[in-house]
Image (tube, rainbow, N blue to C red; front, side, top):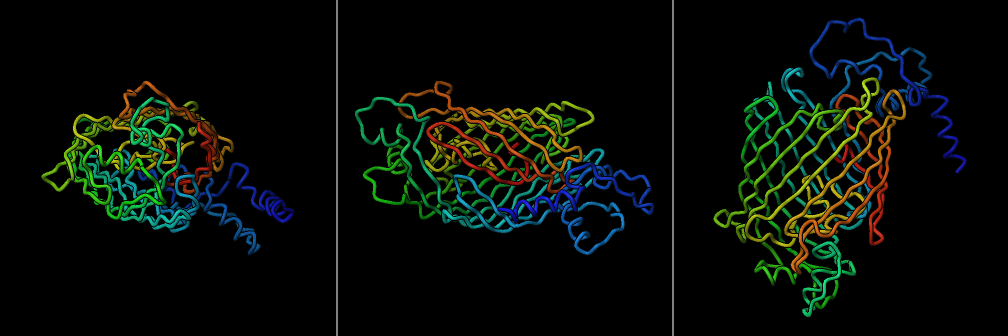
Length: 431
């Protein structure tokens, strides 16, 4: 314990840039005005890379003033993570951002790739991108996923008690929130392309291919939610395909995709599973994603109030059990902090969250958040969407990991009902 406190004291005394506004000399060879915002206005910011450099300079007894350099838009780090859904995770992760056009009229393009293993036996590899061409004329986003998944399963619906004479339906509704564990392998690909119609407004289309194999529930159970739902809906409980088309409408004015200070992001997707493309069944989901950011201070730009809504509504057909929308089923699995992924789910799902983000240090190295969220879903026993709600909330810290891309290392503690709580770590804001 004393060694830990000693190391903290060492950081405070020897690396004051971590805890105070950093003052550096500008590179006189780089004073020419440039439109590249990646190279401007970072001298007053301090990120983890700066901290590492200052520690190395101290160890080497280097007393020269650190010259500000063009910050890199790429972050490479060990992918060490934890949340109740996946357990402890270790691996490697690369995230980055780059402008492929003039930053004055082109949104930052971002990408992420990772390969990881978790203590729950999950092996997960992906490559994702969100690319904006010069002047935002086109936006392409998508990714590839290959994974061996282990998913905690608590049945369908919101955990409310509904009387039924059929044991299988009670298992599916699972009012006692008994935990089941599903294993499966997934191969996924999706790609969307958007064309700008008006400033900030895009329309587009895309395709998705999802192959799920070797599906099974661990342990001995008379009934499992996976098997009961599959029997009711005619899906295979061992393997199936979910392939189809997407039509999209997007409106975006937010100033940064990783940590927005102001603006709006809206994405509406009609997702159509198609039997003629190899899907087990045809089904239709309307997905909505809306985010709004209010900047609360001009002098402290990361003082922000943020709102998020994500929803998925069934408009035809039936989804397979593993594809039902629910907690953590958004594209980046960030909804529902306070619950494990898939804790609540239904044919339709509605989620909203509000987060207050506040600065702690003026150089933005350290900041904090407080958040609260609610979610609702329907079930097969007559519970309607918006009839039952389940809340969660929490607080967290943010460490500025890469000032060029506003990438934060996020450390959150969140709690919900049914004894659900846990630590959630990750890169970039939840929304």
